[in-house]
Image 1 (cartoon, rainbow, N blue to C red):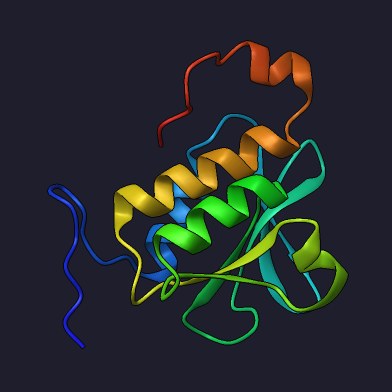
Image 2: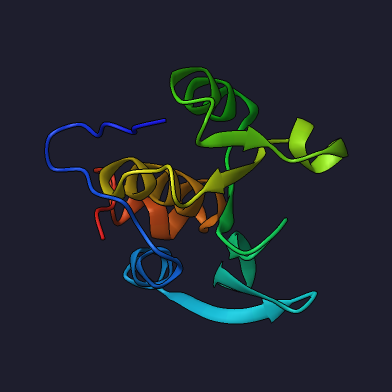
Length: 127
């Protein structure tokens, strides 16, 4: 299957995922269950390497998850179980474009960051 990206979009790697996440305000990298994770004020909003190498996870709302999954089902897949029903969404890195991933990571950050921090960045945070 040949994947086409929107203008300005390009394939991303795990390191690109990491750079996009860490560019967001007050974000730190840590580890959870032997996988790199990205936290804002100690709360996880994204992870790498789960369920396998070449995948990431973003913590979306169920509505955001529905939108991303419906728009690009080869890229965004709800995580199994209760976490997935609450919006945890796997991202296939070899299939996602940079701009699309940036929107998803930014949404996950805004969903997780403290309200006072989000209010400091009223527009969508761009890494």
